Length: 302
Image (tube, rainbow, N blue to C red; front, side, top):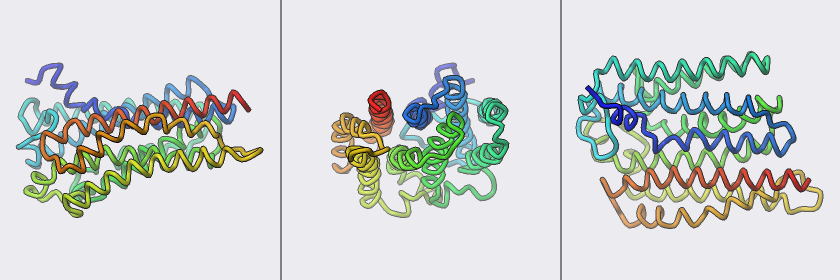
């Protein structure tokens, strides 16, 4: 019987910045465009957090019953370590998805944008089939694509849309930066798990690329996120530009990536990479907070 602490660890709290970051940035874009709505922002946050927790438990369940998590280097795995019954972990995953669906339905009712139901359904299906079902795409090296699309592009632009009622070029652009940094969390996780995933036939992108190229890929994801903020900020420096120069404030958080890059490029493996996963989550949160503050500053000065 898993303890309460083990259930919390099974939810993988170190990954939760990936759920908070896009809502922060999407709401900051809405504020910059003079349409921020607190209730809708909170509902979007509930959707994102519940979906993240749901997918974490779903991965625990699916990897556990496949035997992929029998030997763990990283965080607790409830099923793989036989701490909880598979059906209990599956129920926890479905509960997360249900909470996300209810909050999403509330947003649909408020916005009257019924097509969002299809987007929400696609997100839940993608969350479950990442490692679940007969053809888990996470085992085929497509996990990063799911993360970039749903926790980057969809989450940021969706958060902005439910508050402004329009798709925003600024939200789409900034979603690329958020998406790349979120992908970096998964890359760090999969880099650590290359040996075990290879043994169990889990062909993640890290397994396909190999150790050395995965390390460079991680670095490129981080740099790509900051390059996005730099481009948006520089565009905002032009006279009369509609872009926020305040996006440059994201660069304040850039020093946090130095120890992460140093560790990854040093060839660290196994448990030595566990702090990189948490550190990348903190970097994503710092990035989203600073870039959001910059957008709010630019909105105030308009």
